[in-house]
Image (tube, rainbow over all chains, first blue to last red; front, side, top):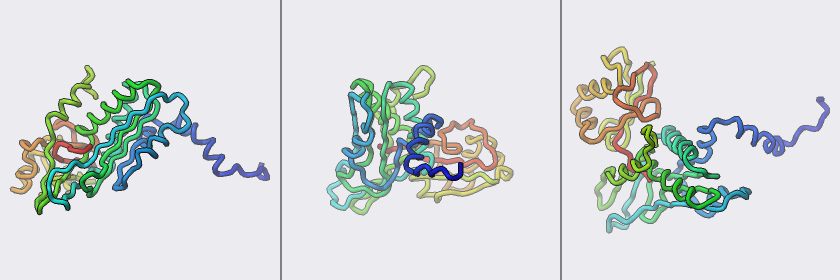
Length: 185
Length: 85
């Protein structure tokens, strides 16, 4: 029917969206919950977007990691390097595993890259669920595994000297707590 | 298509962001072989890729072990333990 009025693009998009979501693989869906960027983020706005329109949400847990002062130099800079492509994929895989493990509604991970100053925000993990324990545990699981699996590296520069931050055994221990019998996170 | 070898963080600072090598020009058949071969290429390689620094490896953007088999066109990455979050 060539003379039928064209479906408005916005309506078309709205109709297509749930179908596309249903057809998308879990990994593709998870990729949409991940953002890696130099830009700062607004915790309130991110959480509002995550909760929007979901009447089954009874709990929201969010974690924000920030740059802690490590030098008296007021011009101290922490630079986050990453592996573009692999970073997003590894975070999405973590979300897929978290969804298999915890009964959660929405998940969001935002991680900044590039130069950051003391007190700047670095990372956000936000989770919604029906009840609080699932959201608490899921957020902690995601952060523990992000810290040992996602390809980010911190470089600290202060008082004219630069050094790469060393990984910590305590982070590996925290992630290992979650090990399933099969060895997967 | 050659292998693309990518380096990150402290290793990138020493060796540059990436190099390419044809699998046919190396005896390497696994990521572990490739690492051993790279160590012989220059003193800079030997220093940067010292396994005592806690080296991690990825094949086509997924973490892998030393026994990961190589194929032409693969993207192999070497990097230190991660420190994000």
